[in-house]
Image (tube, rainbow, N blue to C red; front, side, top):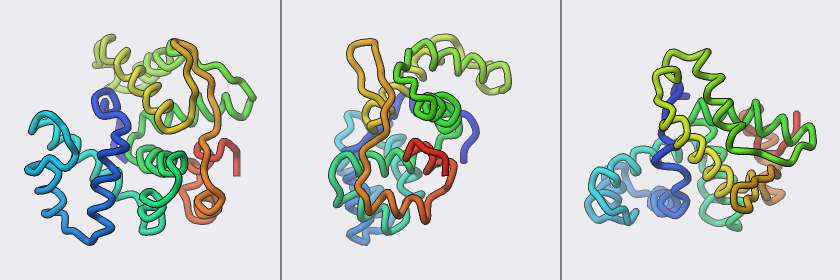
Length: 199
């Protein structure tokens, strides 16, 4: 897992784009073919060449953490389950987001605390700045934007429901087959986040 980075600030969930790349993977297209279609033919429908390149790299990195079962279920499950599978991949690629989800989200779920304020996300980032030479160098504006990225990520992947500036934590909806597979084959600390329970 990469150490702390700010990818979720600019490239949060990218669900539709990830589906397009995953479909190419299931079709057996090579990395070169996928890259060409995504970047040169703009299969992921991003406005600029730079954005296509960085987004494709991030999506490919995320999807590389999904085995054949997860990849197939990502493409062929209901939208809630598919989004949860993508969230599972993202939790493996982003150390800071993973730590936030363990330390703040999971604790709230376990303690039956519903409300999540953006201020709590920002406070988490400031706490990390006290512990990390990387995070301490980030400007306040960067922390603010990253907090917004975290909240957007949680909303799109089913970990919160939002009403204006108010957010309530919840467990994502995941079908039984994927839940069972996660329990048996998943990375335990991440599965605990996904299911909202300690295993």
